[in-house]
Image 1 (cartoon, rainbow, N blue to C red):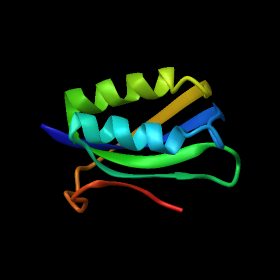
Image 2 (cartoon, one colour; image 1 turned 90 degrees about the vertical axis):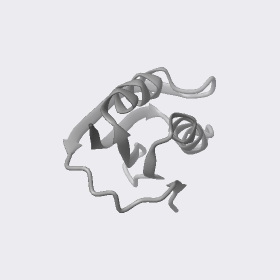
Image 3 (cartoon, rainbow, N blue to C red; image 1 turned 135 degrees about the horizontal axis):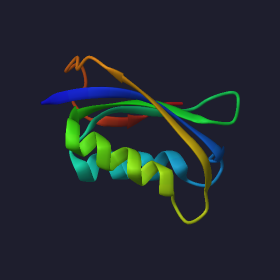
Image 4 (tube, one colour; image 1 turned 180 degrees about the vertical axis):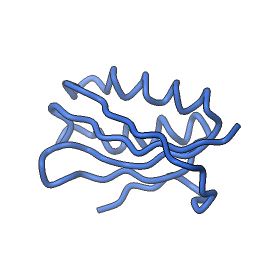
Length: 91
């Protein structure tokens, strides 16, 4: 079943290639949506796809990339919209 989640990742996640990591991870899993830096220093976004893949995606966000220091990952399930055709980095 396709689903969606809005996510927020806190910690040292800006200036360390984290948005690229998020985007690459989503693309590898076949998810769609977007990611961007938030003014409070976190990274936020929306991911859509198969429920099991969303769960895997969120697990990867908790680990982060080698330069990040993830302190927390919040996610809020949403209804699947199907509005996205790819996963993009927003600025």
